[in-house]
Length: 180
Length: 182
Image 1 (tube, each protein chain N blue to C red):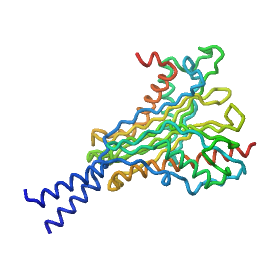
Image 2: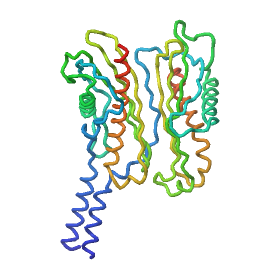
Image 3: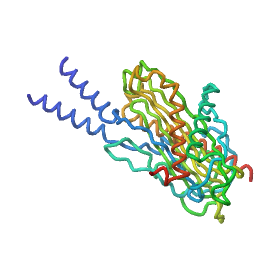
């Protein structure tokens, strides 16, 4: 094997290893910029509390939705919707919203389906019992045609599911708060 | 030309690489149970009509078959329809089920493998209290038949029934965890 062949083999190996390192979907991709349902601004502040249940992405595995990125996407989506104003992660808001990612299961080989189930809880300041709590389910599919998007397809799948879930959340919160 | 082909190969391998070959994963039922509610020892009073949330107008008889299958499995497990509450003071439960996705696929495609021609079905079942309507548990499960080629002819006609069995088994595991572990 001459030097060029060794170089090529080395580059091939390095490129495959680098491409194989998983990175999680970003909060920008998961933010629902177009809220979908028209929401009625409450004019009240909200604190986005803890998000739990997410999993850290391991370099050698498929990407996963992480708590921090989900929380940032939730904050950005609420800000964009203007349902609450302001929206912060600092305590002291008139409402407090927390979330638990119950499942983010991906199944299938090349024809993937994500099952995203998130439990949300909305509390009013000073109240111990939730104003609303519920599970929102999102399911997204990618076809085998998307295989050429490599690892990006997993991130797309997860980001689409989160955006759908956050849109459902906005609709649900709007209904709950409109009844008050 | 040969050199160019070599570099194309490097780029293609990097792009497809490991991440495009996700190991086949059999979906496991997603189970959520309200930590504040006592679920163990309760019974299902009634299995409600199964709803179609796929947006593709499933045949009515498929939905009925799912309901009947769930009913039958829960009855066999002794978890259905008992006027006597098993746990005093606790409301009996209703089972709300919806089909959220249903794809028949095709057996010839499944011969190719790699997910081509896959038959897929997902259902969501929620246990809600019969009076208050409060959800106390839910199970979501996806069944996929994506390999086996012509041996899987008819998989699309069975997949919803197999999935109903999986759901019933998961529900039994929620209501009777000790028996399910045995």
